[in-house]
Length: 196
Image (cartoon, rainbow, N blue to C red; front, side, top):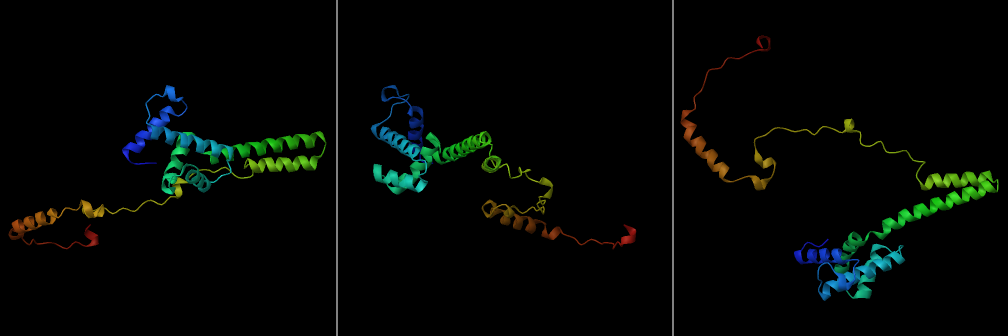
């Protein structure tokens, strides 16, 4: 997706006017914006008619048909997929559906012909296409995840070197200089484990 403001505004205009006649546009479009919208629409129609085409082939189609640069074609592809839908994903879902329908028809015909071996094969294929032969995922086992080890610290450099301010060292030096002479040794008493 584009990041500059003008390109984003153009995409928003195209989205608002995508399925409207030129006379009924919700927001006015310049000629160049209209050409971009037509390029998106024609590419989608081509892709819809040829769902087996890969992303690379669609890039080649954009560069050959419309004379855009490869980088522009690579920028156009995700916009087309976002605005008009990802043909490859829809094609996969449709193919799965069709295979399931054909397997069901084959199963019904084999039952009508009293061919139980063929019926069993069609049922096996139907289960395989719908992934019924695989176990459902149970999800994440949260108890098996290790606990992240953390060590408390007062040093902000752990977060990022950019957060560390050089003035902190000068403040520490001033504090040390101010209280250096006030530090006194104190008597201590050793404690053994029996006394604790």
